[in-house]
Amino acid sequence: MRLAGFLAFALLSISILSYGISGSAFATSDPNPALPVSTDLDIVSNGASVKISGTVKDYDSSSGKGLTFIITSPDNNIVGIGQLTPNSDGSFSKSFVSGGPLWKLNGDYTVKFQYGADKSEVSVNYVGADSQPVINQPEPPVVTEPEPPVVTEPEPPVVTEPDPEPPVVTEPEPTCGAGTELVNGICQVVKTDEKGGGCLIATAAYGSELAPQVQFLREIRDNTVMSTSSGAAFMSGFNQLYYSFSPTIADMERENPMFQEAVRAFITPMVSTLSIMTLADDGSEFEVLGLGISVIALNLGMYIAAPALIGFKVNRIIKSRK
Image (cartoon, rainbow, N blue to C red; front, side, top):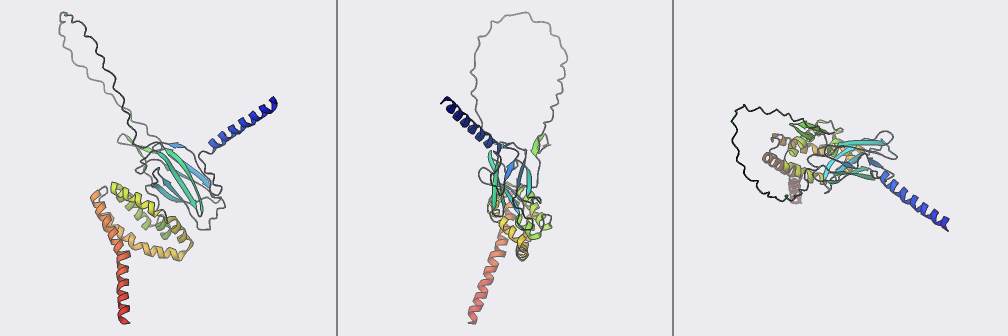
C-alpha cells in the first residue's frame, strides 16, 4: 500500500512539473499549426527592439497570397501594419521598435498575422507609456525641538577673504538604450517607416512600395497629416476601417491583372487631389484641417455627387424620348 501511494504521488508531481515547464516554454508562441509565430520578448519598454519569427506551412510563392500583419494597442486601436514576403521555405521574421506617438497605453499589444485563411497572433506587454500613476506620499511630521540657550560670546575679528569660485560641474550625457537616440539631451525613439503601416491597395495597384505614387502617399501621411494631433486622431480612426478590407483587395489585385488595372484607374484621381495637402505647413493644425476637409469634399463630389448627377440627367433624357 505504501509503495502504491508513493508511486501515485510521484506521478502527480511529474505531471504538475511538466505542465508548468510546457506552459512557460511556449508563453510567447502561438500554437496555430498552420501559421506558428513567436516573439523573443514578453515585456518591452519604450524604444526596445522586438523580433517576431514564424513559419507559413505549405507556403507557395506562386499563389499570389500576401502575409500581412497588424499591431493593435490594448484599446484595440491599430498602431502599425504592413506586409512580409516569406522565404522559400515559408519562414519569416519581423523586427520593430516599441514606442512612438501611437503607443499611448501600457498593456498587451497584439501582433496579428494573416496568410489567406490562416490567422495567428502573439502579444507583448508594453510598459513604456509616459502616463504613470502619481502616488502622493504623506509629508513627514514636523518635530519642533526646543531652542538652545543663547550664549553671548565676544565677536571674532572680521577677516575679509575673497569668495572661492564654485567648481564647474559637468553633468554626463544620458546613455540611450537600443532603438533610441540622443536629441537635445533627451533620449527619443528612432523614427522608422512604420508610423501608420503600408498603403496596401496602392502598393498592389502600382506594383511596388517604391512607386512614386506610393511614396507620395506615404510622405503626405507621415510628414503632413501625422504632424498634427487632429491628423493623428483622423488616421487612427481611418486605419480601423481601411485595414479591415485592404489586405483582401490587395490579394485580389495580385491574382487578377485586369482588376489591378481597374483599381489603379480608380484611385489615380484621388491620389492627384492629395497634392493639395502639400500646401499646408507641417504641424499647422488649421491648415492641415482646412485642406483635409477640402480634399474629402472634392473626392465626395468626384466619386459620388458627379456620377449621381450624370445618372440623373441620363435618366431624364431617356424618359423624355419615350
